[in-house]
Length: 617
Image (cartoon, rainbow, N blue to C red; front, side):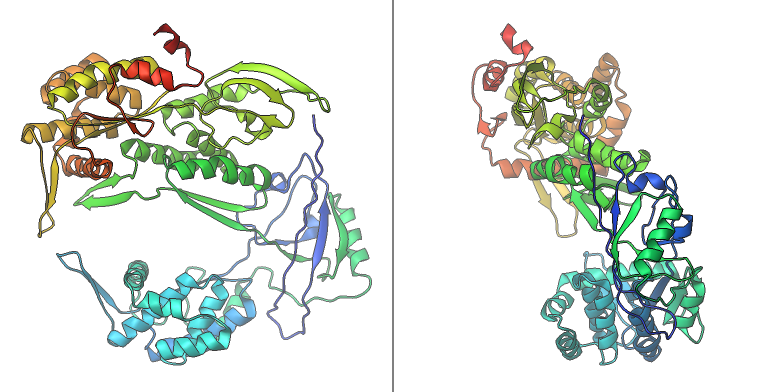
């Protein structure tokens, strides 16, 4: 076993006070010796902002006071009262207390958003088009300027100069901010989209006048926002002193409460045996989709490494949606994912894991593990099956350990080496203390077809079905039920899909698409469709195959008769168009067109280390 000693340094930034006392920038450095008790295990740090009351800090308990007033300002840029408030009261709070408060602004006010039948969006503002453009300048500044404090001060600066291009240039020059991207954004669709967003948020607030201010969720109409904010602190930021005895005083205070934190060096904040520490917590956000190859690569390597090594020091948020599209039809909502219904289900597995697994770190590592195994029910089950089958080795210096591993299930061997695409561990015959050789060996099959094409029926019910039945846990299969259909979008926005073998085939294609979307187990969905293909792919065949396979066919039929069925078919049409085929069935094996005699034999031939079922053929 290895013994690890981690040295972690916390850096304190500038401290600004709610009093008129002079202050000096301060820095503290701590060393932590806690191999078995990382910081996160001392207490619940839901929102790690400030640590106050160090006299209460114990080895097994960390008392954290989250004491951050929240300010919401709803305004419009040409409203005289808004200009007055933003350039005086709000600006003062931001300049004095920016590191202690959470400020949100909404540049929309009494504007109105109208969505026309042709899909266009029109926003009209109380003080005319110039105000709408000014609101968009503010919205774009909030979106583009990375430093939130600078963005708020930039907007306050524009508010004092009519919030137009000229003021953007002047404020940009004054604050050393490039105003060009902000102006370009305000003139683009993005500016309109941001303004619509702030309109939606403003509607939720339900105000009757602007400026409308909320302080900690309560309407505020006082005389001094700064004083009100200071009064809302349970422990207001205090002035501090520094002298030659600071390090000794702090060291003694920490030693007296039996904490593993030790002082290395400090310029110091210390008043009445209380300190305020501003913790520097990097924020990491990952937007991804579960079947995107690059997402899989990134999540199972770079992102996973950060989570494993630094989970208690960073604030991580993940968003499993990617390039999906949400389509609303009345009360129904359909989500169409870039890599098909299987990806939508994988995204939902990830979202549910983040919602259900209480430990955020475990949830993200669970999802990273699923990412390496197609993010389906099987991968979710395999993680739990293999957690207790992990192989541990005591390595001797310079020794090579020989092992032969025949496992098709994932485990945490990734800590022993770089597993770029961690999908299956196959034929690992040399395992060294500093290196793990892993072969990723998963054939990919794509089938483009239509439900009533005789050649498609023949292929799906024999060749593809055989591969799915024999090798389903070793191959990655994607099917696209659309074929030679055509999608036409009319001027009134309606969508019409016409199929080569008539409306009955379109309905059959939708039955297949809905089965792929609804049946959670991908293998069962493929075999269900193969079963329908052999029986004309209609409601009768759906019922028979459902009864045979113990699958409820009613939701699949309902889906095929609804707008969702049409949306899924349109999606498969878009994917089919990308493939650019001239005939169906059109088959790709590992990205290459396949026109052989035995798909099973040819799939088995692609394995570098064929699985056991392939040895029988």
